[in-house]
Image (cartoon, rainbow, N blue to C red):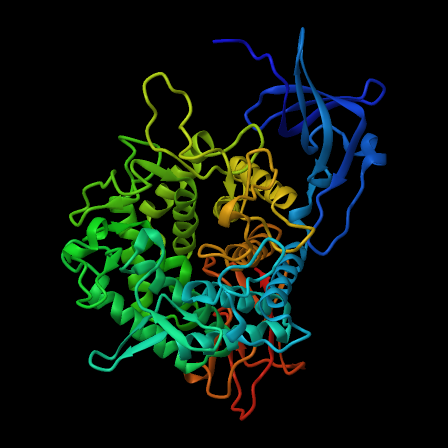
Length: 608
């Protein structure tokens, strides 16, 4: 093979070991302990990682103060393969103002970020606050700059629901009424336009979406028009239809939402659940509601990560947090037991198996997936196992989460630049040392979320584990340095391995079949919870606005996530800005007074 004989630009991420200000040379070490020497040029510039509500933070005049041993840096530059290969730096991004003060750990960092993201989406979709929030204007496709095409009148149920989730989460952290309005109006729109009530079975299922003509005529779309699920009713679309409404229910206690959730879960139990061999089928037929119809083709009698595992993060954990009903806890236990029983495949691969036939034999020939791994699904399993572990501990949950956390940095992580890869081959061919990329080495925003949350929650449970600290720091620093769109708002769908935005096809959009203010806001919400309440031990204010008929027995449950019992408690509560003391501090519940008006509730959760 020819030696390297061409120049190329790339990113080196790591930690400063020394800086010679006279020679303008940085020595650094990467995540996996490789050393580099980087040369600054006359044109090298430097900036500090900035949040979405911040302007450019120049640090070109502070290099002597910032380039100290241990400081995390991102160096983007050019390799010159001469007598000795040199690396000359174009620009530097600092992850923090000091080696021990990373910006993503600052109090309020993620709250300001979710505020900015939610504000962008209601502006893009509804031109708020100039115009009223009106979901008739909602469009699935949103351009890079937030624009909508006049001839695009597709409204997908899941994308509306995902946006509603983001609005509800933003309200819980900020208390801003415009976000609650967007969450409630979106939930009402879903109930009015996208919900089908089967009066024969008393079950509810959700349309894929609707097309709206310029004259306002609506065409309901029962079966999915997305390629992977075409002409079927996929489980994950029914799952994510509940994501936004259930997060809204946590704020309002609207009994209509709870009724919808109960009857949708009935649908899962009746038609998606395999009562014989366990788990949930990925698709059912639109007429017979059977998973075994020949016309389902490659989706006939299949099970996968989305149909089994996505119940937990999308709606089921939040539904249990709001109700603490035994039915939902039992469903969560069954879900995680099923994952532990069937998904590990460590005799063949360091990645879990994600797709299955009816009898749980491995399906490694399905569509684009073949025998490939989605890195983020592995991380998502670890994250959600640790959530449920907090309230229902089992050795199998903790062991699998720890196993994934140990394996993923070796096979799905970019140790040169930081950040998590997308889809890779599960098995290496003879002679290979790296798992091959399915497409290329891009990094998706939602997979960064799974990595950040997985290592944050693991660190919260195991505060002395240095590897969990390392990967939560590196993952969050990479995301905040390169995924935030400071020009147009929101976050990028994908960046290349080197952090440069990947702006091709639908992956250049801010709204699409896959993206709509969900993962970016979920990351902000739960990063705040894990950092403040589990890691930094800081009080956190949360906001709710119950309806007069909201919540069974007038009990508002305020736990932001599944946290270890006794680790946090309520230390203050106010209703309509007046102190209120009828709450159970340790049970994290507020006993609401009888009222004919909506109540604005603010609680302070404090680590024990």
